[in-house]
Image (cartoon, rainbow, N blue to C red; front, side):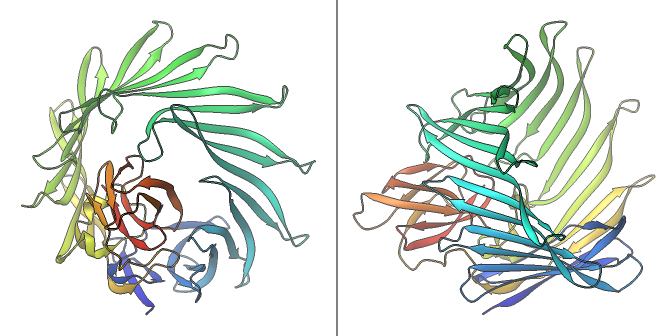
Length: 475
């Protein structure tokens, strides 16, 4: 059954509000969408988002998003301002996206298009085109290619960017980024990133930048991250910046020091320090203090403090600035959350890039309130309310499996172990993000561990041997 999710956003204490609507499906779960205060500039004037909804066709291989906008802040008149069409292949991967925009007369015109071709393994190619209203044709503008190549010690992921030539039909290389990993796809550790640019004079790639990651017995956080740039005259790598991390015995990041390279002194000069504090049983810092380096001393600058309930779950966050003259902290911002504790995280579908939001949605969040600095205290600036409804299945993503599969731990931090009860020696594992994009696909041994530490926090869907399916959560 296809149903609606209504999310009403109250964006100020004066009750200005935007309504954001999503239509999609997900069985046996509760789902919420939210949209931050959204401005679009049309003919130089800001335009508020009125509402937005998603719909999909019967094959679940096409998804349409439609946005309506208010014409101004002082009127209830609105117009059909934007439409995005997404098309998927049988594996749930996006193969084409089309964007339509307001033509100024109450209708829509074609604006941009992105087509993706998937090749061997995880490789793909994207072509980005713009609509030419004068000749009624699509014109190719940019191309992005992604390749993953194995080596004796690991593999290299390379993303290359091209522009379409104005005078020729050729693709002109611009720059590329290479990510170097050690280990296998399921147990990878990022060791370096290299940035190159295309030299049109010599028609070859020139090295531009380099980031190196060093680890000290912990592959979740790098102990040292160093950035370099290439000296075009000498060909040498020049120091730019460095970050040194301290990791405790529990594998948590407890402190970082940031440096810049002083070429005149020929030494690293500290700039900033971040110190993280934890409570027992949590791998998320409840307080972070930022200090600035000044004449050999660390001077407090900013503090971020999280409030917790009795179960060590986040309920609020406060940001404070340090007043050096008074020697005290002053609160400048606060966000508080209200929850329905009848439903926990595993009963929610939250299809957006989560990162820190994973920690905020430990239960069904109904309201976020925002307070900002006034003369003497914090005052309510605005709040957002969320409304939930039961769903079926998000289009383009696999349904929940009825076949027994054991994946643990779930949620996970770095690694997961996958086991099927049968005697399969090998498992074909595919992992999708919330948009249906394949983020991992490989054949692994039944019962083996996969290192997925490189994934962003959030939830993902898996498919094993084409039959076993379900959800995993990355902390």
